[in-house]
Length: 216
Image (tube, rainbow, N blue to C red; front, side, top):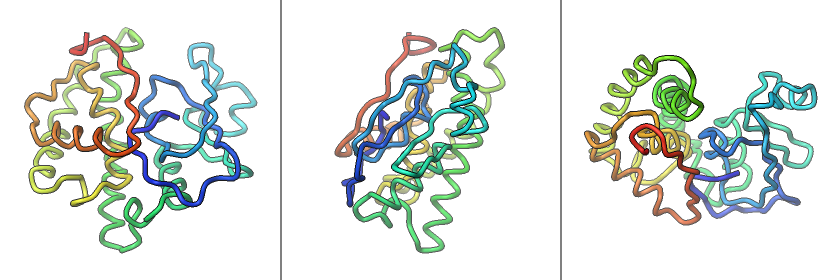
C-alpha cells in the first residue's frame, strides 16, 4: 500500500493490514494512512482481479482491496474513510463529522471518482498501458477540472481548507501523475503548490513514476 499522505495512526491494527494492489494504480497508492501493511500485488495483465478468489473480495474485480482482521473492504475512497475513521489520530481532521465540512470532503471524493478518474486517470492509463485508443477526450476533461482545482487552491492550502483531509489524498495521485497522460500542470501554479504541500507532509511515500507522456 503505497501512500500519498500519512496521519499518525491511533490505535494500531492488531496485525498488518493486507492490501491487494497494483503498483501503478493511483487508486492503490492513495489508501494507506501510515499503517503497517502487507502488500499483495495483483497481476492485472494476467487477469487475477477476475479470478474467483479475488471476486469473493470485490465482485467488481478491481483493486485496491484491504483485509483488516475480519474486515474486507474494496474501493479506494471507502478504504480512506474506513482507515482514517478507525486508525488516524485526530480522525475528524481527516474525515470531519461537522456536516458542512463533511459535505465539502465528500464533494472532492466525488470529484476523485468522477472527473479525475475519467479524465487524467484515463489519459494516463492509455499512455502507461499503451491502449490503442485516443486520449483526446480524457485529456479534454482535465482542463476544466484543473482550472477549478487551481482556483480553489488559490484561496486555501488544501482542497477543503487550511489542513489536509482525505479529499486531498483521494485527488493527489492521479493529479500528480497527469503529465504521464500528456497533461501539463504548468498552467496551474496553485495546484502545483498544493502537490508540494502534500509531498511535504510526514509519512509521504511517492507513487511509482512511469516515463511516458510528458514525463518521458
